[in-house]
Image 1 (spheres, one colour):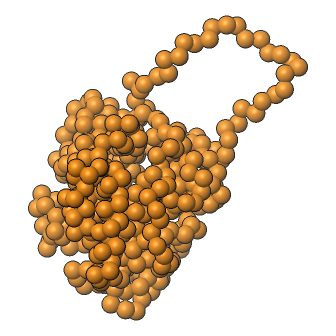
Image 2: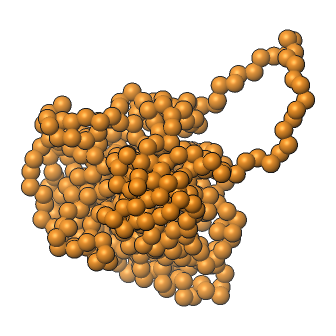
Length: 418
């Protein structure tokens, strides 16, 4: 592999993530009407008037992705067909609470979290793939915000893509890496995670051993904690406090949170609570930079509805398989191409996935996980030699052990690194 290209980073500007589409009266009215319809359906007339105004006025300018096509937003129903959506977590401090650092001093904009959501064509399965921030990947030529393009690079860490070409460049890089087309994308900063965790009323996480991380001010005793607000974002940021202190440990720790979040969102209490549904919509609209294709509230609601009926054991969280290594003296992690190809070929074919690896260095199986209360059948079983043989092999694709992760139906605990 060639030596990572060194070059100066582009000067910072107020808006730098792809091409910003200027707001027009027509777009504002369309968003207003979309918000009106969604809110009437989920919250009733009592709060609709205020909610419509509040959501429509808080939608941020959107980013146009390279492969987006113009079209009308879907009706408020589960979106038709499959979905590929990239969620990027930015470490930028600009406009964020001072507790996260000095926005002038901490001026780098890196995508420290990069996750791809894939929903199958028939809406029977969903997979979330986390890409380690220190993984060396080829970066394609990306558009500059002021015209022209950045040169392609043979090997750079994936978390630099947000600096080179904004959200659109991160999408292009993940498309090249996975072979999947990604028409939807969103970028969220620290404040957005705080607002989203508040909107769902907090997320219960299990901690197996104490977490003590002064860097992120994360101090949690062993046990179950309901996290929201600052506690939630600090838990998701902690690296030194969990597992082996690596970013790979942080990913599996984040999956503890995410699997619990899915269980919370799919609970009847959450799905039928108009206040929470409105709060989630408002948090998403006001605290994220969205691709143009995702900026209409109808689309966001439609994607969420596609997840509603997927069984928990078919909501799979995985980490892109890697191994530790370096490129010309630059330390990081290197992609394991064979197990990765198996994973993304399966996603492209919408094959159901079965995990064979462990949950990763930042988490362990919850010893107090709920169990099936059905009584065991103690009747002695005898094999009928005439009975047809059944195939005990799980359906779909059994992923290589190098692909670590868990399902939303797996109860896990964070593995503290005290």
